[in-house]
Amino acid sequence: MKRFLLLAMAVTLSFSAFAQKPYDEKIDAVQQINAAVEQAQKENKFVLCQVGGNWCIWCLRFAELAQTNDSIKTIIDKNFVYIHVNFSKGNKNVEAMKMLRNPARFGFPVFVILDEQGNYLHTQNSAYLEENEGYSVKKVVDFLQHWTPKSLRELNLR
View (spheres, rainbow, N blue to C red):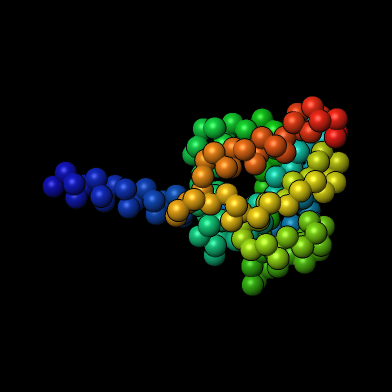
């Protein structure tokens, strides 16, 4: 009986994690990106755009990891304004994709980092961060740490 209850709880928790919809199909992504850049300027951060959609299981897995893993969440919260830029059949956000240098060619999710002025810095193919049926915390942490404002300042690149 205990095993059944534990299994039922695990299934319920996993469904509730995916019940959250991080991507808003109705939002104008250009406005969303511009608002994130304004916030990044005020907070001396970069913008981390996770491009994808609620239809993408890997997009949802990363969104959940970013919220639940303390190491990743801390790096994001300290260094980035983190947004989910929708790309779906219903709204491909064509102008936003142009702003982000058409990252969809790398698959989904794909990450684009902008500086506090909205200048393009980097596109990250998420396949390089995957491990088994999820993401490697080490690979994600390494990726994020290499693109923080502090790490680029230390290299005299910002």
